[in-house]
Image (cartoon, rainbow, N blue to C red; front, side, top):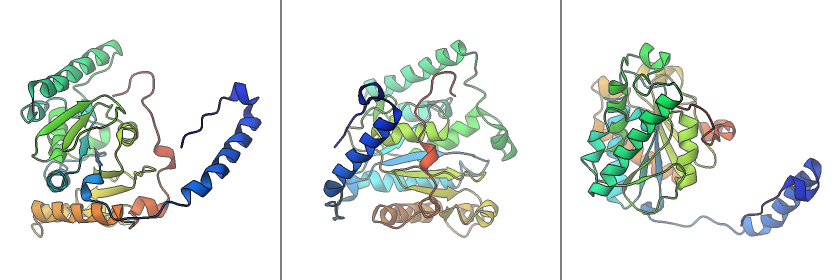
Length: 285
């Protein structure tokens, strides 16, 4: 149920606000009829995000998330990888997994578009690591991209979509978006993602509404400092007390619990109202 309002037609700001409140009140009886019901895992569409990456991202949290993605795809659910500037230099790892030449060429076309976009905006696509990334041990975009692609797991790439284009297939897909996390996640949610899994090494305190966000720490020291924000610690992979397989299964099980109603840390904190960021005009890398 969608109701559109135009300020000029309503007669100004206050009349538009009043009309919006009336519209919401009229929708409440319908909304209140909604109840939880069992659904297969194939109804989940997971947005894959990483932010504040560090030197551990590509060897702990991201591969573990990739394994969780494989489990999800095995059960028929889609998973959406994104942030085109952050696969730059590692895009061949995705084209090799494309189900058709057409799908692979869509990735290549997007990369070429970004190269032209960066040149036009007097930016650089091959120098993406932030100061925080570098402080965490990443030095080049290739290192960052190899870690970012690890989130996608090992299943075939089923499709490539433009920003916020509705996802109409199952399995692993890619959605074009800038590397700015809230902007990418907003596009993924608009495309149909109903849950976000976000890996971080520097401690990104991210949430996104209306899709719950699960935060996965790449290292134990940051996880211990920020337990109020982090849901899962993958630092124990580096310590030898857990395997990538075990952590991937842990992420997958938490995805199911959160989808079933358990609050993630960001939900419990009420984080996520400010992370609605559509792709803005101007240079966005």
